[in-house]
Image (tube, one colour):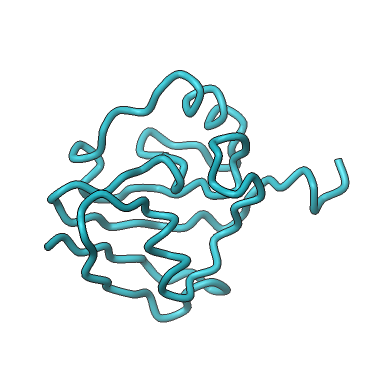
Length: 112
């Protein structure tokens, strides 16, 4: 059974977390089911960037991102090579280490 390790985030997960998970669930669902309130303005439909996460370990175990996710990630704050949308990053059989970025771009809450 894989494990998802969330690195400490000052607001959402101050102490970090290590969570045993079933394969086939998204990083975002794991976070939400365990009280880590990652934003998800589009309700997990791959239509925004609010659930942007950085996969610090285990990135290559994920299916590659598709063109829609790549286009959205181009708009994410703090984009890096190991960036993914949490709603699209489906956990396989390998452990992941996830960092939640300090900021997110939420055009609804920011009044754009």
